[in-house]
Length: 169
Image 1: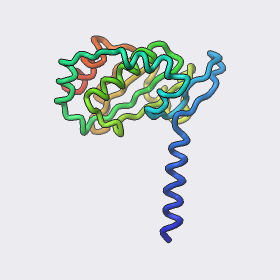
Image 2 (image 1 turned 90 degrees about the vertical axis):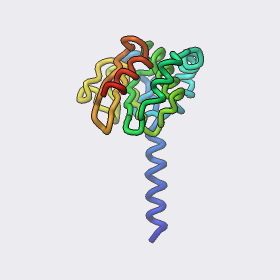
Image 3 (image 1 turned 180 degrees about the horizontal axis):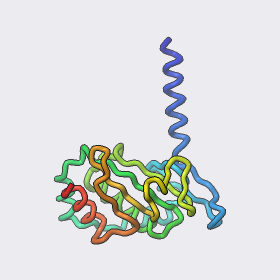
Image 4 (image 1 turned 135 degrees about the vertical axis):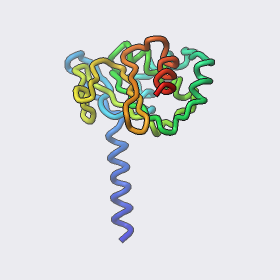
């Protein structure tokens, strides 16, 4: 009786892993892109590492703001990050955003990422229904309720905008 349950569980894990970090040829812009649900491992792929790694490694977030972010209660915060691996704004902001999350010890199991094609579609995320018109978009939730967004580029800085959203809500 236990064997079928274990096999089903393992099959679901394998299907879930294989559904992440997918690529496709975007016929509109004629390039290979990330498409669909992502993990952090996607940024080590050949199509991302040329822009992700240099931006991530060179970005120096404001340490004062990082300290304030670390003092926030993040247990009830989740983030949905929607990117376009073809988009120069995503090339700049996504590595910086991930670095900030690393620096504040954000629980990455509370980060969901999805890559859209140049037509703003994805196999498992409805950009129109979620009112996502620009990438990258970081949607911040507290207890599954949206409390703010950072759209395309920050108003002040990523870390300041994130602190403002988390601390006032």
